Image (cartoon, rainbow, N blue to C red; front, side, top):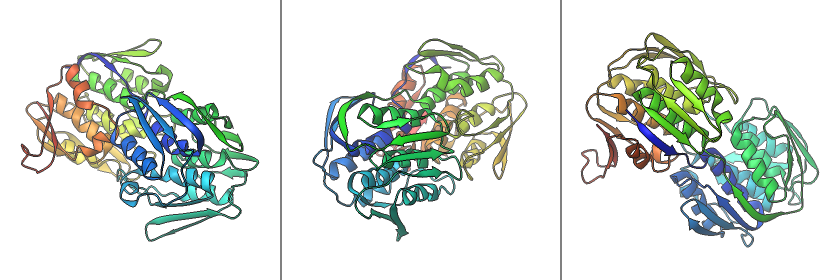
Length: 423
């Protein structure tokens, strides 16, 4: 049972776009509320390898100076480890008129093509070619040209990548059928604070008037919607009472609504949310959708909670092809669930038991942690590097709420790697 208060860090999905976007800025960007996670660490290292000066002011504030960066190939070994590396395509094209990056890495839960990214860059005047695991792009004349771009499907990554590329393109760019997630608004606000002219972020039509250059400035990243949602679900699953601080409640409305359907009490304040678990959880049905629908990044965590609810719940994944790998791990712990394509059926009321399990991806890893908190016995979670991609100080924050969780070093682990142990 989790009890207490937890402070939410800056949004991962905003930070991993804002860091590459800093490459466009001629001056010093001071970025506050930067989450300390492996994805941001890798992106900052990539910028340093490209010649940027990165200065850590404190644990959540950094300064990035890309004014003296000159074009060179991005480091292959780092690029291939992180999905958000594709934002460097837009940033390097916008800054240098040329880019060479690896195909993106990160979590593997189905085919996630970058065809909409390529469509956008091509429409802006770039020649783009994908071969041998690399993306090559260049612009005749060195500068992109504004245009109207209609995305064939709502894509967060493509919206953000095109937005980054277009801020210094000649003329006006209009992105239609754009994604509307809070981190897209945050990226646009960051760019505007550095001198860009972006309008309409948060709607399905974004208009970007190209500028000659971006200047330095200070910007604070929004709180992480998914980190907040994860602690909310963990509180509900364990029957606890947790005040989740430093949040924007309207960003969490779809998560709060589903938790209330389960019988969980959710009380919203100006910049915090109090979650009180119910004695009995009720079944719910969930379908993941683009914002403001229920986020795909919260689907595994809710899947873990619904194993404990009374009745049969159905989860339909509306974004990715294969995001139910975690279900087989939950079944190792005694969950009754099965998957058919993009649909998972969960028979609630299971008594979960601790077991050795795997973090199949970032959010699946969070789901296994939630299941472990609710299980009898010891749960050991492998491949925790996925969890470290998106949760700052996850172990310490959970311990502060009363969780019996610890990081086991490879010297103590029979698996030869770090694991999380939850009792």
